[in-house]
Image (tube, rainbow, N blue to C red; front, side):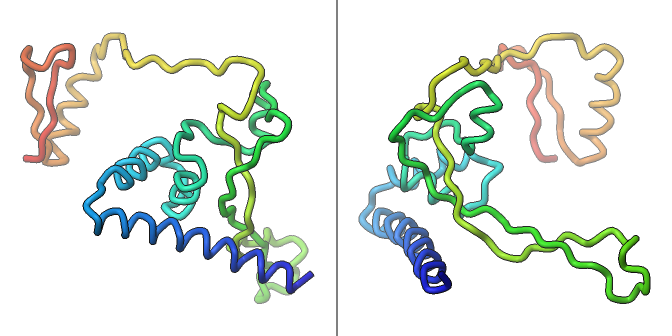
Length: 177
């Protein structure tokens, strides 16, 4: 079993290296479309590590929303039969008891990173079931008494706040002071 785990880890590392090599070779050849697709993936999967974004983008370039099988099930969706998962790395968290304390049973164990393991996620296009709620691009409402606090906060951060009708439908522009 240990031999199998080592070969699996080696294959995972090779997949990450191949993704990076593809990106580098494309850039050296003057093809920025690969970089653009990686940047698009980074924007869509901002909660994932750079390594996992590379893995998602290299295995399923058109992925838009990914989650594990349990998460899809909780959302009322099911992964279609025969779909191939997208391999990413998930952290393994272990717990370490404090050795200094004589009564370690009552101590809350400290979480620590033990390593990583490969897990599989699926794109929304690989699932079926309940429609996902759509997020609106429009924010509505009145800032009311919060506007003064927002202006004070931006000025305290050395951010210049300008109001202009020229950037409609937006009303304000933030720039570094």
